[in-house]
Length: 126
Image (cartoon, rainbow, N blue to C red; front, side, top):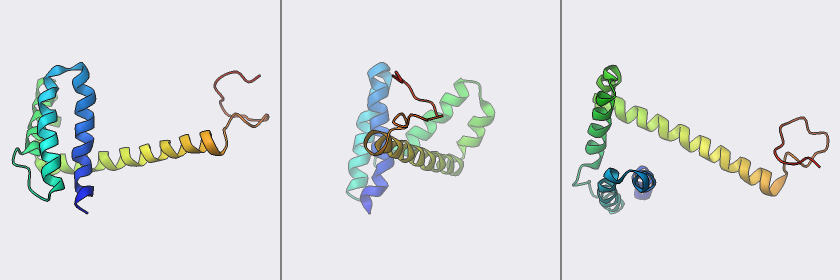
């Protein structure tokens, strides 16, 4: 059960690993995210308050981009958590659906197999 609480932290670690390849200033967040992930996996509270740090960084980014209304909305921690939860659920559903389509088209039946196909098929039809 504790591992499922760590999935958002693991997702953030993967995100920052990818982003840090191109933007070096985000590399500092990887160490904090990893420490938070390990602590949550052990059932402890994050001593580095990674969640608060990410919340404040996001609000400051919105402020720098001159999106004051959104910054005020997300400055409330509850609004930020609810929005983050909804986005996580939507991305999980979309990723699962896309993975199912990949498996379906690769191993079960490709949409290009049917000669009378009216759908879009990429590649040569010959």
